[in-house]
Length: 377
Image 1 (cartoon, rainbow, N blue to C red):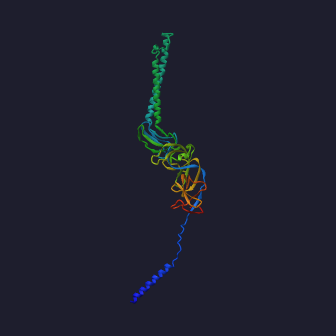
Image 2 (tube, rainbow, N blue to C red; image 1 turned 30 degrees about the vertical axis):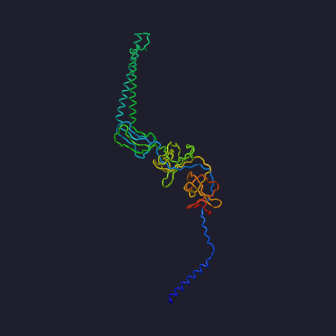
Image 3 (tube, rainbow, N blue to C red; image 1 turned 135 degrees about the horizontal axis):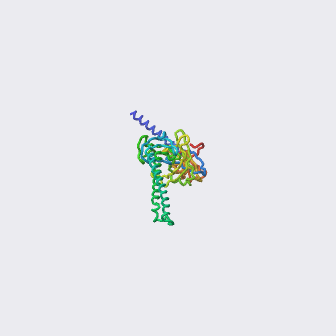
């Protein structure tokens, strides 16, 4: 019984304490904590006039490339010491020779035939002169060139002898040409890309001997956005720099824009430009056919552009600008090109706009920010 009263007493005391605490609780209102402002780095937008730059990837290809074919039949009798892939030839250098013995014999035969035809013409000419003298005795005063008297004056025989001589001389020319064709020469300064024969191999007319690539100039085909063509202006006046990455360094060469092709790449839908590099094999390292290079094209001058760090541009279409009340608002921009870690843009931004140049996780229009000082993070 006493234990029950003790328990009831303890419970009553606890209830009394709770009542006192509720009655003495402060009646003041709770103040919600002020959310912290997002700290951002801000830069001033300054317009500038600059020449358009378009950067693209290009593929190096030969400006000249031919397959050297045999123009007659025979056995390969000789090849040059540099008759191997990568071998260098100057224009007119002998690359290979076909056995020419049969063709030398054929030339001697044609020369003999020509001499015989020449002798026959001389003899016929003397016969005609003699026939003319006899005609003067038989028919004095009658014109010897009349048609009825042509046979008597041996005119047809003389013409036939002349034609025979011309045919024999043509045969000589043909034999000389065939003999010259046994020597295969480089048609221009080139290097040998592939070879198809060796010494002792019999080749027929039209058989491939080697593939030559011209070494005086290469072409580069680069693809650029169609919209970039307007920034280049007159493509003949555009300045083109080609960069070749060798792994240890970047080698730069000047190039000339030849043409803007009249079709687009079917996969990327980008425009294609052909450039030419002269003397591509000079310098520390030759330019390699089939390699990819970086092409930088400098075109016409564009007014009122802004150079911003890439961190300031969101989704390549907008920037966030801070107003006088330190609240941010989006503005649309168009990215023209990239220069390192900076982007050159145009759009709705104006001179002295305070552009946010630091990362923001989820920016909202009207969000209040706090400007920080120091370099762009």
